[in-house]
Image (cartoon, rainbow, N blue to C red; front, side):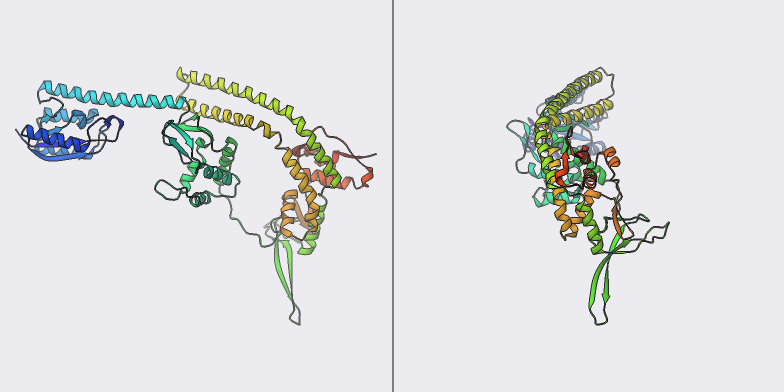
Length: 530
């Protein structure tokens, strides 16, 4: 009989090994036991890995050596050798083939007899049962935490795990940085790389101290955890943690990410102030600007800027001539003056806005009531969905997808309710801002700042400005019928009102509207003559 003994000691970081002796303690106990029993240890194998699944390299190396040369094993307990049926079965088979002569444990009796192998098999089975039971208990505990709305894992960046309350709380240092990142990206002029650079500038790095790259930034900006939900096992759940961003801001970020994921053409810088603002009236191509230098015989140079069609149409030859920048600027200024708002009109509209602030309270109350009814309906649907899933009438994937949709809809409605008091002012503030902008149009038109005029013209006319026969004109309909049918462009309404009511101020009378909103603005309907 071979007297070669292999000492094997193992310790993992898993929960089930918390009560097991450390590696050093196992080695000391086994060496003392070998001295007492006159056992000669030929080799020691030490491993720090879980035995729940097969594949331990050091353990397999020891068994391979035994298969070749035979030998014995000395270990602290059978659960140090195997906690799965594959490794346990391999040891039993080595005993059956007598390649493994014997097993020695200070805490467990075992020999190579049928009774000894039966007891060893029971010990391996008990170890596996303990692991399986512990795993089930752990999963059951995690599921219960999820039902309570508690995130059962490490908190994402921007949050910390509070060891005292066993909850996830917002990190006062990093949460504002995450919120600002969402706000920056929602504006649409930031890239994922620039957001990563923003994180780095604010010292928000990975655990390894490296910069957060694009893939990680994408994960952060698309993680529902930041608006109050969380994903667990591919399913979205409602969380009790404090949201860092609102659902509305989160949705805006998702829209921007989706839009930027589509391929776009290269951006070209405009060399002149009005480039990109107008189109050619004949061929529809863009209007560009260029410098011209005229040198007199005496050497004096004169610098001019001309605007002309790019003449890039492949179907027709454009006959439009160029126009001096000064002349085009004067025509754009004239168009802006036509959409400027007189002071008495602005005073009247501001008075109506103040009145509407009180009238909107009733509509907000109705809005909240209807949303609460919708939330109640969603809650009923969630319960029916859960009942159908528990009764096995609904597949798991369908259940998860439908639940995620309902929870997302419910969260949006809840945020709408929470913003209801401030939401009634959301349309009032843009309207007041537009009135102020309309009053400032006169000043912008008379000023010499080309960039301010371009911004104002883009806001008023959009892409509807045409240049033809050295004349700038707006292609958008400005007749009374066209504006009244659309009712969606306040600048067109204001332009039509200024054109239709050029009578003296003392002959002008205002007529009231049912409701004054920017999207249903029909200014030309408010004025009539005696």
